[in-house]
Amino acid sequence: MKTGFIIGKFYPLHLGHMYLIDIARANCDHLIVWVCEKAEQTVLGHIRAGWIKELYPDVEIRLVPDTLPDNDTEGWAKYTVRVLGKAPDIVFTSEDYGEPYAKAMGSEHMMVDKRRVHVPVSGTKVRENTEMNWEFLSAPVRAYYAKRIVVLGAESTGTTTLAIALKEHFNTEWVPEYGRDYCLHRNMGDKWQTEEFIHIASEQTRRENEIARRARNILICDTDAFATTVWHKRYMGYYSSALEKISECKKADLYILTGDEIPFTQDGTRDGEHIRHEMHAWFKDELEKTGRKFITVTGSREERLECSVRAIEEIIRKQKDFSSPTQKENTE
Image (cartoon, rainbow, N blue to C red; front, side, top):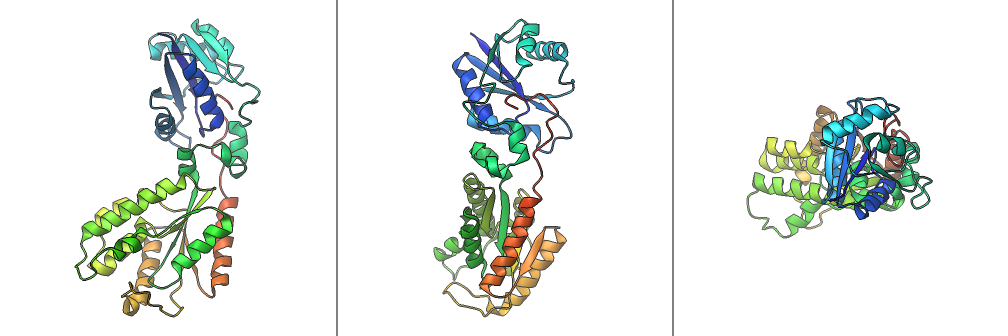
């Protein structure tokens, strides 16, 4: 059995890495991929390893500490053989270090697309301008890096109207409010139960994570699990620790709280006109208490959209690079 080997940091994983892995899988019987990790990296190693494992379940993924200088070819060769237990039969890289690295282990080496002809991307290009290179990111990586913008607020404050307008403005995906669909099929005479809110929050989060894979740099969300914690307070009279755990799994990059100064409109499902202003205060208090970044928008539809767009564009401008290229990486 011919064992293949790839080493890199995959920070982030892009289509160039995937091309390398595809070539390697076609030229060996068993492929091992090392994901090198340093403590200062902003994306944890197990997340990067998880991206590869999701896309290539047949590949053996190992997360290893990156403790040696990049130019220590002999050291990396000895380290690899010691950890693997033996030298791999063939090493696949797209970098100049590949040949001497493989030779030091007594392994065969295959250079793959060194000049980036088949996949014109590199880790450096992705880090320098993520948005312009978004097409070179795979679905799980897009889901991780998409900036999540949540529109939330009390009943009849224009949340859905604003969410749709933002989706259209940025030409991206949006996540409709699952709780509204749930209510349409629920007997409104029944007393609410905490388990229902847990279901709503979990399903909203699942849909959000799924749709984020198709987003273009940002994802617009009409409510999220955090907002569900406030709705639980509205109907149950207290906050749920179980819901709060769900809401902490993935915080949005920005929350847009819609103002309650506009007239209340009854759509056949709403029953909270009498508590609308109080709910608005609850949302504001919880956003502040939990340290979430948010803005409040008021005024006409056009004014709310303009204010929201400015805030989102500021977040995009401040988007930091994935990393600095400081360690070994295939298809750099």
